[in-house]
Image (cartoon, rainbow, N blue to C red; front, top):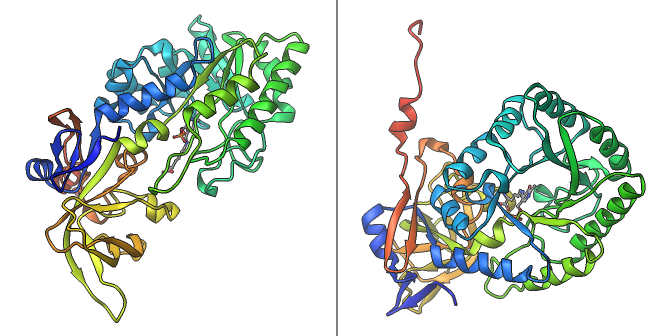
Length: 419
Ligand code: LLP
């Protein structure tokens, strides 16, 4: 069941027609569907039904909006956080501290302290040095913190190079061949309860094979650690499952993923954790935008200039990513166009030579699959504001993030007296 459907020729999110949101909140605006988030959470959970008591920690970085986190907290999800700011959000949204995992390659001293004080469930340690620092802080406070060691399995995730994290040359985790000795060194440190291992090889994976290879290496490491007398009771398999950005793309389902995990981990005897982000939030949101005007230069297709820009949705400019673009009230006519934003960079281009619904000045349209890594990656470049966010639930909707106007951003700036 898709909760983004045309009804009487008008695109709805659940039971709300998108023009009503544009009217009330303005554009550009991210619009999320609660029913879709819940459905994706259920499908993911169902996919893991062959495992005993899996722990699911939503990757907050993919969509940190408080209301979105609250929806997932109510589904029993915990959180995978990578900064103090994300930790604060997860707690504010109602996620239980014990269900929060703190990942991240550069946790600061203050963030390690914050995590300990919040009583989070697990730190995923990314280097020996980080482990020693965490040990000292924990010892100071007379506590023992649960930790997993993130390993870099040197596996090519076959995704975009900027979102690949499991190759030897990437900054994440500790090299597999040093993992056992680092694990042993950290297990000897006071304040640390080394209880497991973690891996995450990249995002938007279209194929389960690299994941299976990485998990296989993790399984071998668990056996090696146990062989050396270490205790391993937990394993965190990260996130990474890709989603279709184009209507005709096919991706592994959570059920296929879960079946592969069940097979590979059958004899691990650990509690497994997962950190899905995109697969939960990606197709639960759209970016609603309005066409400012069209213009032609030369003989090529027209430029359709929309009021959303690369500062609101960075993925096309950053990764050359594709987002489907559909009119909110399609007429059935089609056209070929370049879709661009108003920002003064050629990189502010959403699509070139794209066949789209015929559309013109004043018309509404959506970029699809914008629920993950959308609003969260926004900036205020060109002194634009921060885009608003709306959550739909059946026939009601609420603004779940105010539009931050350029003047509010300016209000935080100071011109020193001596200028
Ligand atoms: N766990 C860790 C440790 C991660 O680094 C990530 C994503 C996830 C989980 C969630 O991965 P997911 O299930 O969402 O694939 N901005 C990029 C994506 C960056 C992903 C970074 N790490 C994009 O827009 O495609």
